[in-house]
Length: 141
Length: 119
Length: 288
Image (cartoon, rainbow over all chains, first blue to last red; front, side):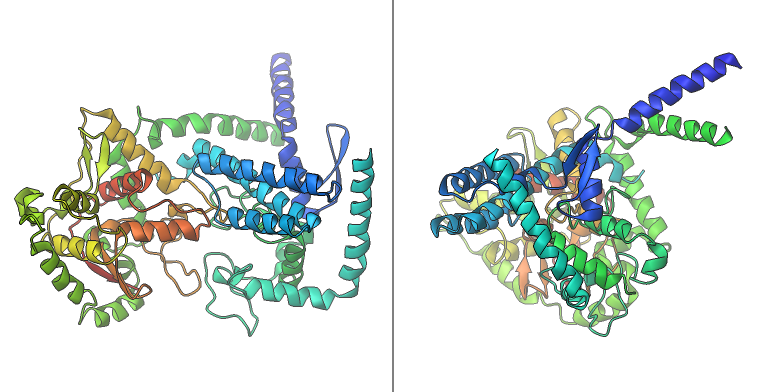
């Protein structure tokens, strides 16, 4: 009896360890999915808001320098997604719009569009990594 | 620090704008949701989910019909989460992760949820 | 207490499941078993559409959806690809500037060979498709290559398929070159992996979503898909190649599509055609 209780305890400890292994991204997504943007949540004792990192970047002062930097980093991410063969169809188009906005000195628009493109590129890269690990689950036995 | 202040300002501004708008125009939101739901280039939800609305044209049936939504999702936020990313519940789902992949904006998702929650 | 024990049991099962799966599905070079894949796929469709004989799958959606079949039968009274077939025959037989013809490039003069494509080319270390070799034949004889998706290349390919009608697909994966099996495995992975902003795999529509409406469209089963290409597609209003369709599907997932005859698409064709081994060539076809 004692032994089995111990085993149970060990198993529970292990299981709770597994439960806590919910990644920041998973917790973030759960809250963003239910509440949308700007909702507060806590993860491992710290408080966060449901803005994508790219959206936070787009909240910097809308200046030429900031817009140029964000557009450039979004373009780099797009290229990373293309390099793994998973570039999404409209990311390039959104980036083009961002560049047009930049040329017309509409810096906030440029930053918002670049943030969207950069987020898409990050998701595409994630999607490729996930597919690589999990594609076999779809194969009929 | 300046950046942080800017961030807080923007966040406040967003709340200030979206709060009253959402509250003032539930009907407008439903109309937006309806447009997004049926428009091929926006949500195109109708391509897989039938709905008992006279504007429904050539509905598909890859997914369940939009009925008894309040019974199926007593918590509206759970419904929103399902629209946002259906692969959480079923990784093989054919349903695109509407929010996670930024197929629709968060505002459009809110609107679609309001629209379908009537059914 | 009982709940906890059950729950633990469940957790244990979850932990064990991936290992069990790894042994069966064959998704590594060591474990992949193309014949097992092919039989599992047939079984999948036989459960999904009971009573439809396997050999019927060369007819795509019309094999499994009687209302569509009725419309299609009416359409096939005057097959829309007839003109392309005639044109393809003329193009096939017209000598190049140097006096040679396509017949000089292919086994058996290019007649009745469609069922052997695509194949693994050991010397080049790659999958070769029929369209690819049509263009290689042209270039070897000093002619410009044709564009991959439609027009002359689809017409020539259609004629070559027509001369092979009724022959059974027999795609081989040579055992003396592991790269061939790897190419098959890559094609298989491509088919099942989700991609694009819409997060769709080929399997989403053509396996689990086959014969289920997307608006007014019914996706056809994957089994038998390559047997009837090239096709005259009403939506195109003309004849087109398999890779044109691949590119369109890929784009529809909201991916930046790969180009026709890219290595990935050729591997996909290799996998898909192997899955159709045992079925007959019935190209060219007509589709909605």
